[in-house]
Image 1 (tube, rainbow, N blue to C red):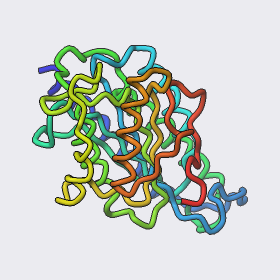
Image 2: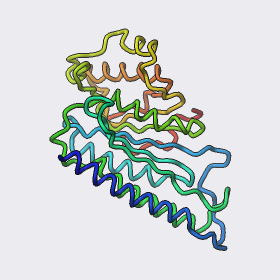
Image 3: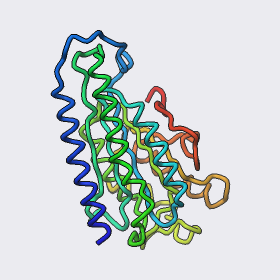
Length: 264
């Protein structure tokens, strides 16, 4: 029941934000003086995907941090970028996903940003921030029964698929402890075997995250368990074609990098 209410709130907010974005895109192109373009010259737009773990192992303060860092990153979006958000699944891909995505309205004139464009962008950022707070809500978590990061990354790959020409980054807010019937990483109780990744790659059972830059927020590296878990994910993302650099795997950074994988 709580999950249905969460999805209902999410759907209602998504419809409202979609209407706002449509209204912004239809705004008139008056004769306001041009401002400096916000996009870097020659740079393709960016696809920014936020993935949120709201399971019981995530503390309230980590969710608060996720909300703050999300707000900061949203404020750095440009015209023509795309934003997506997913909540980590509990058990498998058979679950209905809790996800949302939206294009940032384009500027009226390519290479030039009018004053009205600045207002449109600021409103989109404000409304996206308000809407996405549901993904970092510390309440209504009693019914979450597992943490299936592996399945969720297949949904993330589906978001990436149509946007291969974008610069792509996934910000993954999680302690990275996969928790399910097959794998239980908390306490290293049931870790994948040494051939787990390779066997799934060979059989085509890994998501295609080619060219995606991955940033993990919430992963421990100061313990033996944390290092074992990080080692698995480093190998996993490499096998999917993604890029997870050591400096992009941390517990609680003070800011999110806008370009965490330069040159990728």
